Length: 88
Image (cartoon, rainbow, N blue to C red; front, top):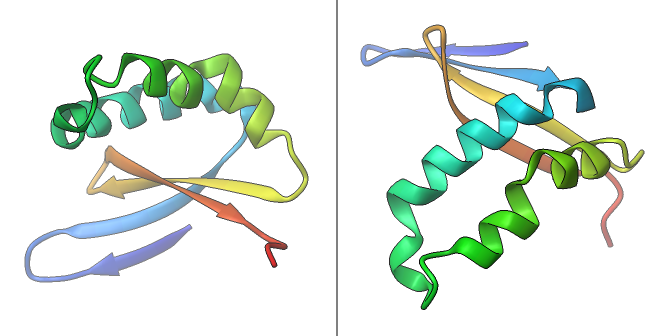
């Protein structure tokens, strides 16, 4: 885990596994709904289903080239990071 502390709050990253896809889905959906729904004619329903469904995330997390991390503020998950390790 990586942690950064500032005057405002402590923020950290924690790697996650495919077993935690439901938690990543919950965090991703909460974050996405707060900021991006206005960009879609369907309120983002199609994108969220194809990007943040736990089964979709679980399969993506199992890919050997992908790494997922949860972002925590104090003890609360507030976001996620997806890294593609070997990307041209």
